[in-house]
Image (cartoon, rainbow, N blue to C red):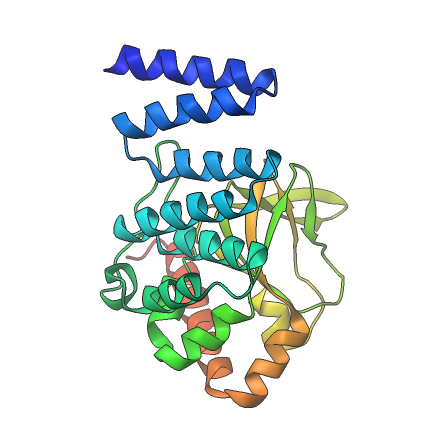
Length: 260
């Protein structure tokens, strides 16, 4: 089976290289029949979009989202539902399934999300924050999220800049750096489900670090204006974010002291 999958994957790359979308899709169907990997459905959705088949792309992304959710990849599922809603804003199924992520075991039981081969476990997973939100608060928070795909080398936030949007990495990795005595120092590499940007929102101060994509990434953003509007209607969300931030700071301090 391994050799068969390898051959199919090689065929897929060959057809993609030729922009032969029809045959690429056919090979992806074969690959998915062997291994129900949601990432295959994501790629199929991407190809469907290149073929100007938006309804079919929506169905591929929905299937990927459902599979991610079943496997406990809440953040990846959330990203796919948001992508569906970007393509079809009135899609009721995506809205309902997205709301259902609040009761997913990864959230309700505070389980660590699985990681794909080659990925490290996230340092600052958004799952604890999701778990502390009520269903209504979760719905309001995720409704305001915007899905972005960014190329490698894209600066998401820049040290010293103003701005208070918050972000979640859903695919790929981003590097966090700061400047010390004129030199760039890497602070962290953030993984899927890592959450960043809340410091500027909570403190009102300029960005404390630069965050740049290390590779092509999918990112969910809660824009600053949407977040401020949300806090007005749901003020407890700020409290939840502050508690989440305090826990992260405490955990970091313990690690620095070599405790725990």
